Length: 127
Image (cartoon, rainbow, N blue to C red):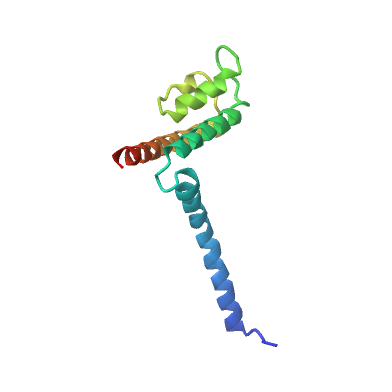
């Protein structure tokens, strides 16, 4: 039976800390490269990811009341306007700090996914 020395225990802990540090980077690359865009070769999958993001953020905006014309379409409208980075979505929904933070995240995701879609589409056309 092997006795763990203090040096061995510290090296094992260090290895596990490095793995914990690298996991979010690996998970991000796995999600973006493999699952969303198939390394920039599948515009259809990127378009599907865009629809999923739009739907998810539309659901997240449901707790925020609309300013005018209360309807169920206001969160969807705000989500589409923010995702496409048009920028006048806050005129229709009352947003607090968390709503503005969600809008910023969705705007970034919209810009990123539209650019990723453009790259994948051009790659497909140029083949």
